[in-house]
Amino acid sequence: MGAPISLVVVRHGESATNAANVFTGWSNPPLTAIGRDEAARVAHRIREARLAPSRIFSSPASRATETVAIIKEVLEATETPLTHLPALNERDYGTLTGRNKDEAVAEVGAAQIRLWRRSYAEAPPEGESLRGTAARVLAAYVHVLLPAAMAGGTTLVVSQGNTLRALCMALDGLDAAAIESFDLSTGATIHYAIGETTAIVRRALLA
Image (cartoon, rainbow, N blue to C red):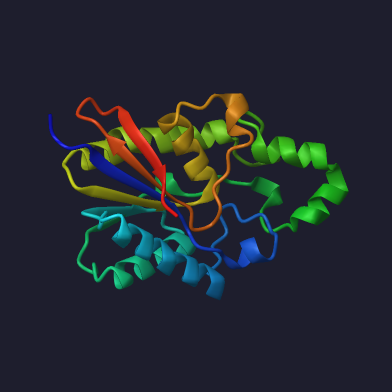
């Protein structure tokens, strides 16, 4: 039996809208100085774990691509192949996009905002549910990410919070109730070891 294959999942560093407590969705803010530092720390964790990527997949969003650029620079891996996957874009927050979260709570109530943000099936007005996000993310995993990972080495995936909630829901075997409390902070880095049967055989949070 061969050695497990590595999939490393990273949430981008802090963005300007994260810092401003604003719903980001499909808007395209840059990283903050804190976010750039978080991205560099991700690279150091990857280096310490000896998980230099063989290939990288990223959301096209600036906050993800900036994170990737910093990781590649720190790891001196500028030649590592990078693929942008639109399926890895953040969940569409609809009419909440660009709104301050506290102001939205004041308008419609904390319970309603929590339902839109954390539940699996509920979508904000004109937006996308986590279930809808999961459908496109899991299709990308099955048809693109997993086949690439099974080629060997380390596959790095950099994306946004809700996109990765959807992916981790599948990889960790979480149900709709468990995913409500599951969260990834900016710069969070998870290493999944994949066995020959494509099953996850080990999971570790790199810190």
